[in-house]
Length: 280
Image (cartoon, rainbow, N blue to C red; front, side):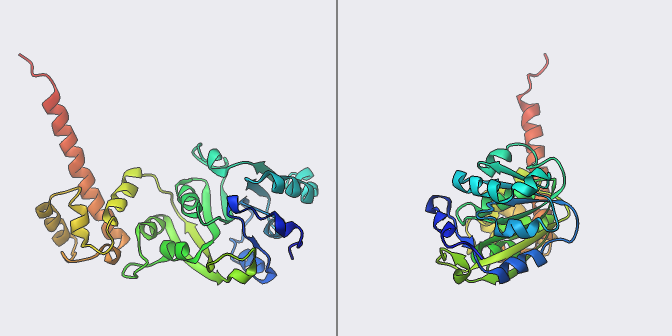
């Protein structure tokens, strides 16, 4: 259990809520992939989960709070000397300026502050070295990433997650499991990857598709394509003209996107040819 004095370290600036309940710590460990890949832990805090992770895996941890870095270095000095624990003190997003967070395959584990959770998960979905994501987030965020088509929570985040693998909400965690307790219920989200996001334009396309979730999808996409062309595409892919964004499958979004991408490419080529000086 967490030392009651150390629990006072929680800093609102970093959105810190320390998981104190051993039951949920063990549940997280049981949800981990069973292999020997290195584990990257973001926001180890007081090190309660880190201690459990080190029983089976080598760990690289990223901690932004300098006070906690000192505590973690002291707590895991033995593992550090053995080469099984490495602590990077600083903002993990600064390290993601490179193509991958580390230069070898890894599993990501984190108790993420709510204000930055979505950003970090998307970075991990793009990271080609990241094989899986197991994160504690606000339940609302977990529901969006793990939702299925036709569920009201299904959004661009659900499309992106299902584009690269399988996402599921493993279990919920009540506020009472944390020090200090957050105001909302948390959940542990697991995304098992079989590929990585590699097309920024597809992400932009989804932002347009879900820009007004309650509107018809064809209305949202009219920002990219004229209505008549879209009607033909919807007919080709078996989509009702009145369908809403959350009712369309990931496969169908991919199909629509590929045709829009092709047409946009053709337009650019025509414009390029038109702009070229004519020979006399």
